[in-house]
Amino acid sequence: MPLPPGRHRSAADSPCSLPLRACNDGAGRVLLALGGPMLTLDSTLAAHGRRPAAEVPDTPMTYVEAASAPLRKTGQIKIHGAAAFEAMRKAGRLAAECLDMLVGEIKPGISTDRIDRLVYEFGMDHRALPATLMYRGYRKATCTSVNHVVCHGIPSEKPLREGDILNVDVTLILDHWHGDSSRMYTVGEIPRRAERLIEATYEGMMRGIAAIKPGGTTGDIGYAIQSYVEAQHMSVVRDFCGHGVGRLFHDEPNIVHVGRPGEGIVLKPGMFFTVEPMINLGRPHVKVLSDGWTAVTRDRSLSAQFEHSVGVTSTGVEIFTLSPKGLDKPPYRI
Ligand code: MF3
Ligand code: CO
Ligand code: CO
Image (tube, rainbow, N blue to C red):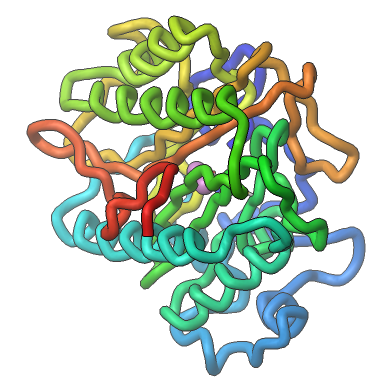
């Protein structure tokens, strides 16, 4: 999610830097007004050639309403119990299975639209709605970020080419819980520097996750990532961060991927959030293209990202979005 410059306190007080075409109705419901008629879930499903409602049981009119109406952001970090851990295990596993499914599909010639379609169908087949559909006017089931795209790349008809690298970011809502995860994929043979970037990004994320324990802080996570990545002479993107996750897509706390040990928020058992560092081969600076979504590196250097949804346990951390098939990072051997 986007991070406001200079203010790293909470998600609730963050004026989102994305073009906010949503408005709050004052009762905690978010209304999606896209410069005209309200966009409904039914119309989005229809646009994807799907019959609404009947094929998406338990899903109210807009997922934004469904997720947030009863649980408006309060500035407090939610502490979840055993039932929530169980629900997040299921949602996280489904997101991971979806990313596993893509491994055999991504090759030269496939378009990112086709990848998006596969994810949408996977969601429908498993009674899960992709959370990005209708999210602040976003109309796709995934973000597909190719080469120098840092995040929020919009799927398109353009075919992938040998040597491309891309991140596919999937969030599936299963029984009202959000499983949010992303991985890097490679298209045919890729340059050695791209391999190094992908490896360092994965290692950075896992070092950040390994720093999570009760009594630790969000600064410990950022420090673990930043110190490792910068020692590899790569840079950590500052403008987007991880986020609390659960019944809300984006909740407290912000998880910044740089930091100093002991700073930030103290971690407690039952907190759920994502760790999703974006790492660049060149400088950390990004710009958002005129479509209002696509973030690219200013210097056009390659960028990579991985993302897991995790929960703080009494002894450390549980990763909800691990690949059941061990396909957590390339090279994927299937
Ligand atoms: N899944 C992304 C994340 O990790 C959010 C994408 S929001 C979208 O937080 F609108 F760009 F799709
Ligand atoms: Co996320
Ligand atoms: Co994500």
